[in-house]
Length: 152
Image (cartoon, rainbow, N blue to C red; front, side):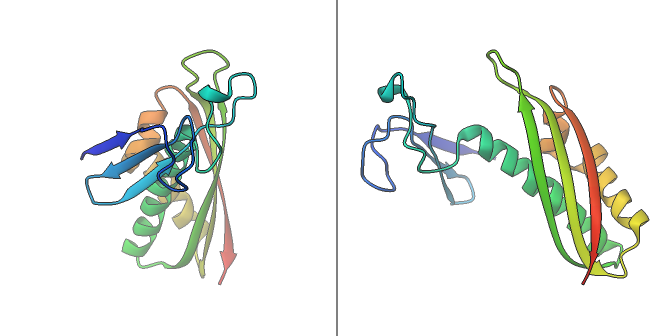
């Protein structure tokens, strides 16, 4: 896996100056834009809030990774899964490096006749075995999960 992240001082999305906008080109040929929060005290050090912040993209990527696992595990188990979303809430350290210290993942899984035990198993397998992002972030953060099931 590879990725190139570039900053050139100018927003490649709007053409305007954004002190902290970065563009990532992934090895799979996709582009991801990231920007920083505005900094009122030192505007030249802040972004323009035109895109997600890098740590938000890390959290979102973790959500995508674990939701992917949950859906795949349920599909492989021949469960009639129709939808899956995961809301991640987090806390970060107050001092640098401001790593994630707590992450809670709440899954909403939609399907027909989904057994609670099947969803619980899929979430646990993702958390404990398959989701590389969750396992990596688990080195610094206490990661907890919960879920609910909605009938399709």
